Image (cartoon, rainbow, N blue to C red; front, side, top):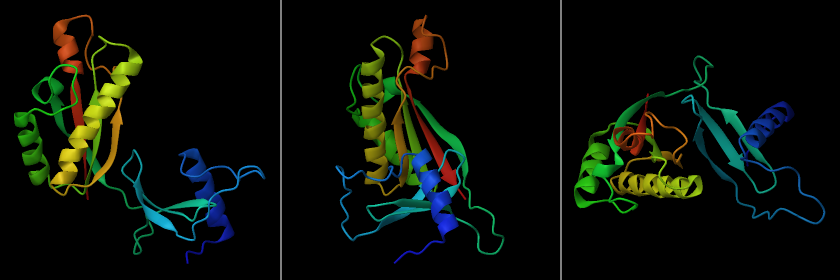
Length: 188
């Protein structure tokens, strides 16, 4: 059984609530389902720092993972290690990988040498925002599936749609640059 001090529970619970990992206490009408099983894992934040988390069904806890010798948080070096134009990976308006695209990604993830990966999908602005978010999520998920199929650990997969352009969507060349999948590598 996991035991935390009151101060650690308060800090961890507050942190979990801020990141949506725990919910507010249940009301009388809405009781949480307690299974007696504690789920736990390691969560990596956007800065690459690791946190232990646990959730027993009633409350969630999260505390920084610390180096036992120095007491400092354990953080990973992260860098964008692949930016691939989606025109080379997918057919237009599709989240199904082409055979050459799949082979390229399999080779990349087999030789990537990272502890974990984050995968971000992006589109141009030709369709509605809602449609583009959905398409970019499906494309990020397709890339993540390839990564997992070769044993790579995917920490997160997010579709941003057209919301993070790297070029102007007013030109064909700019739109082509915006249609991309970015892979961030986490290394020690």
